[in-house]
Length: 168
Image (cartoon, rainbow, N blue to C red; front, top):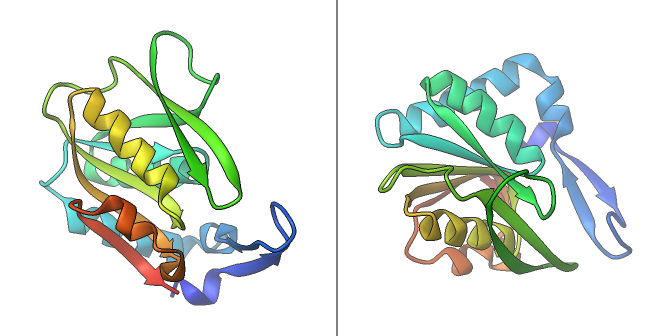
């Protein structure tokens, strides 16, 4: 289901990068609903809150959190959240970035499901996990729609549960 609803965008966001766009999956109502239900079923009763990583992870996290009847926390690019935040810098496959989460986003010990669209080099997901742990919660799992296995991102998440719906 997932592979047939991805499209390749060459040279985005910079020359030499082949971007895997999953917006066609979001546009297919029945396929998106199936993805959300399948993901929610995997984590029902195992997590207390869902995190979405900016920006495409927000869409997935909101839908899965709704399906599970749980709250959702946003992990955003630096400078986008008001109030007191925790920050984490990381390297991307094509540059560097920084993400933030509100300091009060999690209750101590909360089990957190991290959702994003793609796992590439693992920098973003790893930084997100570090933020969650610094905030006093625990990462129950990292779930992605697509893993680019040849980039080795899973290695950065060693010791954590990682699930990819599709691995290339």
